[in-house]
Image (cartoon, rainbow, N blue to C red; front, side):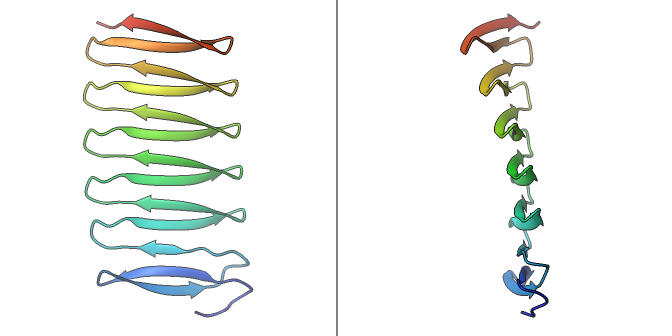
Length: 148
């Protein structure tokens, strides 16, 4: 570790399946970065306005959780491979809007924030029913529509 300021920036690099911690200074904030080999996860943290943005990427059809800072809040985004669900959360006014999309004729549950409340909406493929819930005065109104 070498000091180039008031704080240190730890960096971890994989060497033969093990991690080699390296510290480098970047201002007054810590920016830990870890990279792995094989099918392990690659956690990466980047400082954004004094906050950290952890990013994890995987190989071999595993999940790829990604977190991005948005106005001091975090927006976790997870994407999967091989016909699996893709949960996505987006920050909206300090609240989160979870959105899930599926592949292979599966249902696609979608939740949208409406005035601090959530409006779950499910859409299906392949001539299946499409249940839709809409908020009405703080209550939910389930509606089913057929496709095909």
